[in-house]
Amino acid sequence: MEYYERACDLRGELVENRRYFHENAEVGLHMPKARAYVMKKLKEYGLEPQECGEGVTATLGRGGRVILLRADMDALPMPEESGLSFACPTGGQAHACGHDFHAAMLLTAAKLLKEDEASLAGTVKFMFQPAEETFEGSRNMIEHGILEDPKPDVALAYHVSPGRLPIGTYLYNDSGTMMFSVDTFEIRIQGKGSHGAYPHLSVDPINIGAHIYLGLQELIARESDPSDACLLTVGQFSAGSAANIIPDTAVLKGTMRTNKKEAREKLVRRLKEVAQATAAVYGGSAEVVFTCSVPTLVCDGTLTKEVVGYMKELPIPDAVGHAGIAASASEDFALIAERVPSAFMYLSAGYQDARGDYPAHNPKVQFNEDVLPIGAACLAHCAVRWLEEHNL
Image 1 (cartoon, rainbow, N blue to C red):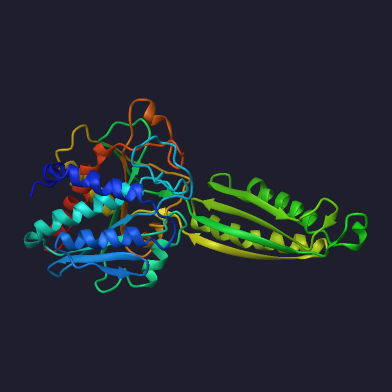
Image 2 (cartoon, helix red, strand yellow):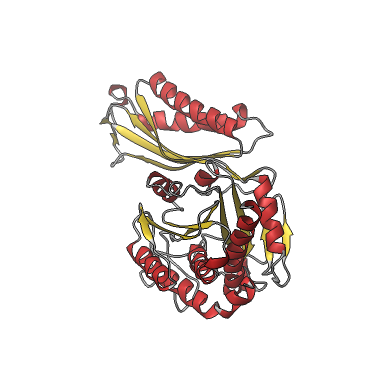
């Protein structure tokens, strides 16, 4: 089958599916509309989908080696200001990261592969996951068996990217860290409250929190190797309810990101030590809780080079690849890549006019639907070609 030509024929269906997800945006783990829609469409296409945790999976093929194709499908808890006629009407959810594209592209890839199932040299497994934005979705589906029965030999995912790069541009990393790790933390400080006129009778958790905050900055400035990329941000400091009352407790919330496993392990350990020791110095205590943890995304170099080669076989207009892409953002596909040799690719979905001026996660961001046939064709064609070359 000529997958790109067939995907172009199905452009109307791709757009319809994408706009359904966009208009019915959902966030987090529980996505009943998206899950029901994916299962309905897969059944229409002749597959037998199953729930996998809060996500959806399906397989097709004839045994042999297994390639996993993954798409996330969750939105962000934010307003949309794109001006699109099919914007989510709730005003509180927006597909500002392009996951509606990912889900639509994988649905059509499933249709293409089902139409060509008789010629498959192995098995394709599909993974439609929720909650990438909260770094919960991959873990949820792993815990419910997405990497078992059948166990994937490799995995592949695509992510669309806004901006001004021309359609046909793709970006990848076959030799290093592609995306940073992320560890989201809460530091819960216990002190002793008092009237503001009698601070000597208190153990002030705000004072403790301020010193912890300053101490955490030194982990980057004085303890992290300058050749590593390490970020630590405290985005929330909550305490108290009145101007003249010293409260009992305070909470700091933040995130750490690194590009190396060793740097991440050191920062996690030292954050706990600094928070607890600083609290003790001022007579209080601190509990450190990590609410989510995702490793660095490191793609398999051999598989990534193979996927790039397969993509070059497709007659995609103006296709241009760029290697070595790296980003300080994080991606929970890293939990899959940690367990299965994986490739993760960016596809440009931008505009070369003013619509391309807004980045992902911006309420005004827009993505170009011309990328939809490209993504669907790449998923299907690369799966077929990998199975052909590895089921000999």
